[in-house]
Image (tube, rainbow, N blue to C red; front, side, top):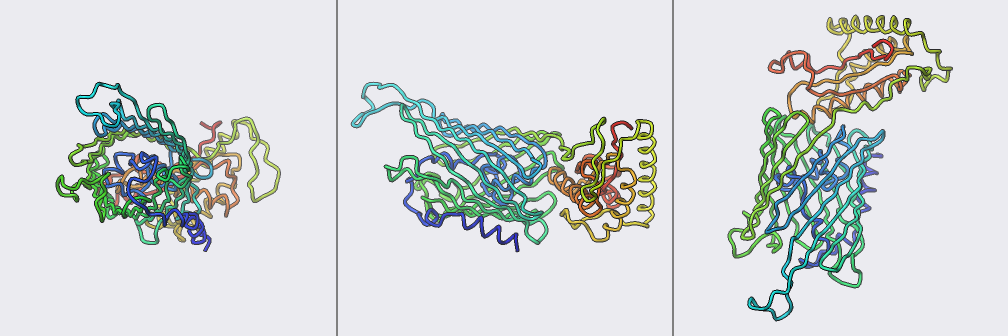
Amino acid sequence: MRKFQALLVILSLFPASQAGAISGKGTTAATFLKIGVGPRAVAMGESFAGVADDPSTVYWNPAGLSQIPTPAVTAMHTFWLEEIYFEHLAFSFPLPVGTCGASLIYLNHGDISRSEEGDTPSSPDRGTFSASNLGFSAAYAYPFDPSLSLGGALKLFSENIDSRADMGWAVDLSFLYRLPWPAWKIGAVAQNLGPATRPEDNYARLPVNLKVGVSWQAMPRLLASVDYNQLLEQDGKISLGLEYVFEKILALRVGYRYQSAVDNSEYYEGYGTNTLAGVSAGMGIYYRDFKLDYAFVPYGFLGNTHRIALSYALPALDKSTPAPRATPARAPTTAPTAAPTPAPAPEIKAQAQELEKKIDDFTQQIALGKFSKVQFASNKADLNPASLKTLKEIGVLLRQYPALTIRIEGHTDAQGIADDNLRLSQRRVDAVKAYLTDKQGLNADHIQAVGFGQTRPIASNKTKTGRSQNRRVEFKVVNQDYQ
């Protein structure tokens, strides 16, 4: 019930007065806020509200930041129409609660020839002037529960033309929800909610956009998405996108945007078929933690645009704090007893070796079928009920060594997309840690949780048996004095 109440709250914040103010085309200011960022999203027809899983989601759906488990950054350069350039920089960073992000966009129109009313081609040269736009967004996503994330972003922007400058602000409000069906997500966002940049002018309202999108991981390598956008000054727009990833080396993308009526800012009546103007395409190249993305979008007789971006995802962060070497360990949160006195280094070493052997023995019992593997619902971080008995036994074992630090490691097979596997493994070890601390009373400061995704296989991913072996949760002794 709380989940649906939160959805109603976020939807109630989408101002009805702005949503209903659908007016004529070309009547808003700060139109550069409508330019899509991120070659991946743009190549997929800008249908990204239900995908929202890379740093560009600061723009598309801030709630999607909660899907990014590690710090990540992306930088984009756009070869826009004529001599216009469009730049974008964004990053995301996971916090102890939620995920923050920020983005910077800059649009430079180049030199524009100055003219006056009545000028003709033979009129004297009056020089040039410049125009540019700058926007900054700070965003935050809160994981309301494992299925629902809420997000928001605050935007500050400026518009400069010749000697005139205007500034303004706006907010985005959004949510992302994992549907009960596997591999389906839905997202919604209200963009650019804020006051007019020049209240005295009727045409200076912001380009408010209400958007809803759905994504479907149809196969491990195939992602499909669809968005519907309702802008303040335009007819509604439907966007479709597809992405296919080859062995986490190459991704191919295609998209299409359709609008029920001709919008002269995007489609060009009298210059070919309007429907073709909505096509977009692109690709991505993966190398370790780096990704190079490209998008191609034609704009009729005005020309073509090209976006290129380089992204980097940092290694997985340990969300726990290891116990300091020289300070006593804190007691479990569920047991208000005094913290034990730290054991001398030789005793710590002996305890670590003893616990390590017991963990190995228990792992053998799991292999022999005496206990169930730590398992989860398909594509989720929900613990399988059969795994609870195993975790209870592990809790009993670990409580015997309160001075030692344990790392829970999560691993997946190589089916699907590596980034998704990394995120899934992190959510799963977080769930295991939460069970051991909340239900078994273990000290959270002595438990680390790190998801490695598919990066550390112990068997071949080409066979069903090998993939099953690679899907595992491991417990390691990482006490500093022992190592």
